Image 1 (cartoon, rainbow, N blue to C red):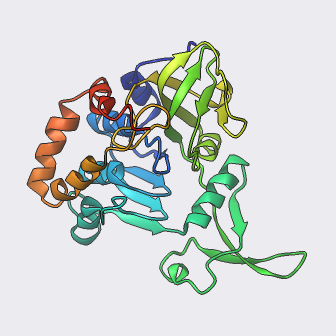
Image 2 (cartoon, rainbow, N blue to C red):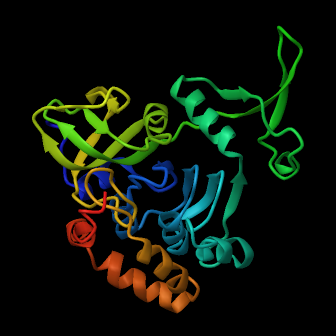
Length: 285
């Protein structure tokens, strides 16, 4: 288990200014603790990639870390819009933000193509949609076998991907149970991969055959951060903190309130605080 390091050291070693980075998790196992550590370390000029940017990207954008975001849906899940992202796009506060919007299908295929080492993803999509009018990275190609016109987008190949998972074993393999989303492909597509986990165990016992196990060779660093997905949930460990998502809508609506909240809850906090934040939800999943 030589790959087990502190989250601070993992971010410092693997995330640099100007990197293309994915913090992935689909509703479930969103790597909030890793994103907060990146905020504390003050990274700048990042291209943020994520299928569904939610409040972690709202926080990172609001702290001036991002120059561009590549995504397929941006919103506070179940609540509304991302106010810091909107302020950056419309008012360049705290910095201008370039956006590249895709469909979910395009992002999923782009991650898969990146994991396969391909330069682009080809799929059926965007028929009748207007995104191609505003996104020059949406192209069409003709199938050389059937002549069918297909959509094509660049593959997603991050410099580094961050995910959260339930467990790592002592060999360094990582177990994801529940909703997997695109985490596997995001890890395989990346040059480096960092995972935060709830715990390290000897072995994975009674694993469902549909669970995702990422072998140790896919991981650059493993960080033990119990509660590290809060306020999202970790199947089998704790439930979703819906109140935090509702609170964020109010906090993020005002620049001063946002800045004060970030100072208290992120800049002056640490990864260990996630244990307490998730503790009251541990019987809900």
